[in-house]
Length: 374
Ligand code: GMT
Image 1 (cartoon, helix red, strand yellow):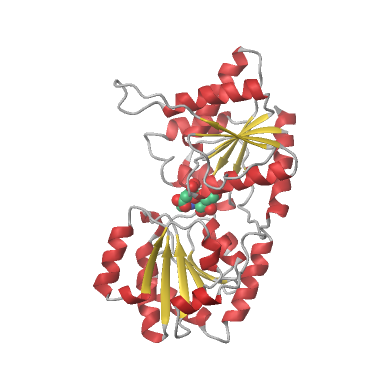
Image 2 (cartoon, rainbow, N blue to C red):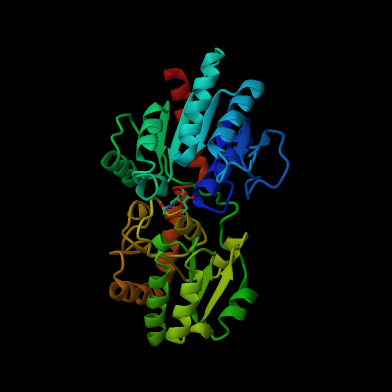
């Protein structure tokens, strides 16, 4: 198939899933055309089946905000027409699904029919999308898509609860490339961070409010009172300054390191003993899956679709959002020397269920089904 993939080219989960999906499809022999405003972060090599089309966003003094959606729709029209695409797959509803609708209508005028698949990733539904300033357009463009997928059962349910959406939504979970995400031997790194064999807790995120990074620091503060431990915080975002201040207030700066954005996050995960994801909202939790693939147990909240991935008492523990006390107890339970190996083994076993080789056929089947139906 010739497939156009539209996504955010940044570090965010939806962009990572879209890029990795495109790469995996290309390996299977499909021709993949990425349509974005910048080269996606993980698309930095040559493959005969991968193409990249940059959206030209023309500015003009009259525009306070350049109309990205129009530029994107125009680029989609161009790529579908000249590359003769079979299907457009847009990731994250805003504004990709409505831009795809517009492109589809324009192409229809020229006698070209292009089916559109929209994948809902999370905040496009649970946070941004449900805001009255976007809701009518999000509802319309989901209903107008030829196929819709959501990354968890919980997100599927939330979409029906929050929007007057009528059409079927297929659940296709996030996936992982186990060739890349696997425990690597990084003893020198572990020794540098934990010279006295301290337990290592890791959190990675975009440091937005929904991630509740403050809970990670508060739990760490309590855990450290009981056992020697270190904390690595990977990523960057709007909450980072506040979190650095919190570390100073708690006097934990010596045991916490902010690493900023890292490309090779699997190297850090390879030496971790526990991964924390205390999010307020989380449709799936790709970062937790990446940790599990590196044999790291998960201490998470019960937000959104996380419990569909992290099995309470098996691959880690699931706690109520904001319940720092229980999270501390559970962290100590996981980190006990006699418990840790079992949690690690079960985390890896669970991650294997989400291997790209299991999930890719689900997308391929969904594409065929969508093309046949439309
Ligand atoms: O986590 C984020 O805020 C980034 C966001 C995105 O869309 O870029 O991630 C969402 O999509 C990921 C891939 O499907 C999911 O694994 C994340 O759980 C989801 N994030 C939220 O729902 C907050």
